[in-house]
Length: 129
Picture 1 (cartoon, helix red, strand yellow):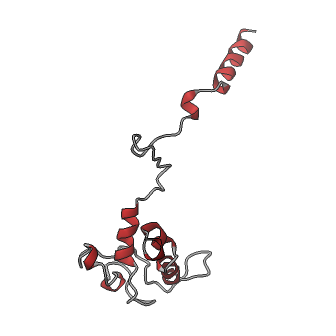
Picture 2 (picture 1 turned 60 degrees about the horizontal axis):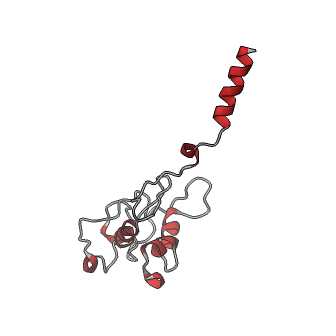
Picture 3 (picture 1 turned 90 degrees about the vertical axis):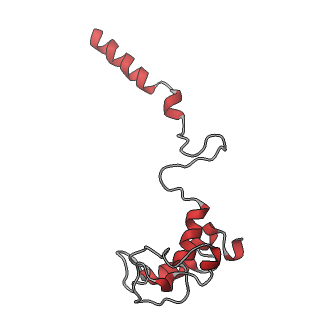
């Protein structure tokens, strides 16, 4: 009887609503009310940096990917990015395909950097300024 009662009380305590269980973590600045869920949040400045460093139009498939000046946009210097701030992506210019992919890495990057692409949208560039 004593074991059954103890097990019942332990189960009831686990199933009882608790403010700790239902509270979402505030990983950002709590005073602004912005939440960062998990580690997936990147700021607009991050995507803007990516835009200027990696979304240039001078490169082509097969060019060296990492730390290559051809991936930097022509207007990068006008926006505070010098020749030392280059794209660090190891597959930016790769003409190979990843696992389970129908597009090459180069084609994926071109789609994301194109007007309306995900990097342009997140950086608020092109039609999204």
